[in-house]
Image 1: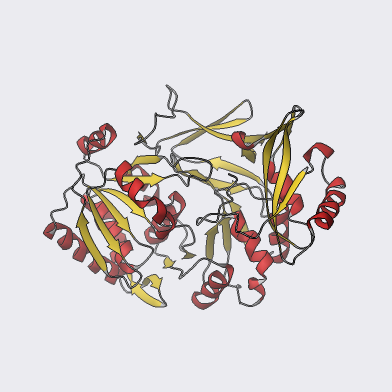
Image 2 (image 1 turned 60 degrees about the horizontal axis):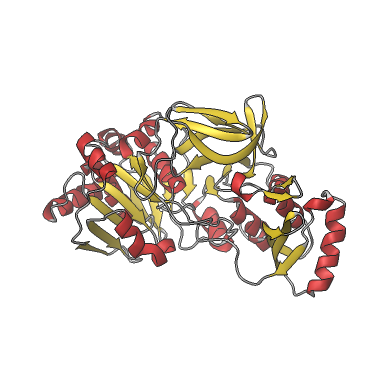
Length: 446
């Protein structure tokens, strides 16, 4: 019922490829057959509409077809991936999961019941409406994860409008709003979903070459790693038409380098949140950080430099936190922005601003400069309390080759003096070996 329009559309492409997983192709017709299998499976295991069901897996034929079957049945889906394995028990409890389907790396599945009965008031409200649901957890990169409950029917509406068919890399995970958006966009337009064995630059470039991928939705952190790795030099990426980036602020130096290296590829900034869905966006041009966001079902406004959004597809609320919406339904993104007519430039989260003696420092601006330095692979900038200035700028950097901390600090200060105001130059620098991003390839500033 909820996906009849999509199933009918997919049936028109029955012989065409829908999904490439482990270098094996599943057609749209085969995907529909798998959805029928899962419908029978869920009947056998008495999974009822409104039941809270976790799907544990990645973009495999079993996982993708099960997701479609769960939506069609009207269940409340809680997708989880290996990236959140450490939080699995906590997430199952918060979402009050009643049944779990675990799909392993060989695409085999196991069904279990948890013995719970979901009684969260928001879940009850969704059940009364009779619509399918989706629970997404925030990444928790700056604090405790929150569980956003969506009415899935609202999220599906925008995919009914036909758009461009693309062969798409599924870089963003299945338990991420961007991953769900990528999957549904691709399937609803007859594209090809290209699954990855892993998400390092080598594997991604290999998949682009082998399967003639046209679109790569990813993060600025990954794109910086791609540049540093030089993996793009070892593979033919000529099929790639579009790279979209979001989830965090893009360093200007990274975007500039990408645009120079790939002038034939359109670079487009995206914007979305677990609480609201993905907005339509349009970058001023491939080399610009100015972007227009909004589209049908979204309203935006800027108050005191902060972006606020009202969305038809907004979540019903958090399962484990108070509602963040004001009385009129506006959501404070906490993203500081500059405005130029219809375009905005995202500067960074309000909570991440470093206040140095009354002067504002945005970490992304400093990181952009540090990433231009020779031998710097990655850089994360944060504020640290200081008794005189209120805070100081500190930087954690990863280096390609060993370098003495003293020599690097001196070289960094000389480099930054020509490019940054004095109060923005890191006072404290730490050279680290560990990765500074999470499984979603998003910088971790904690």
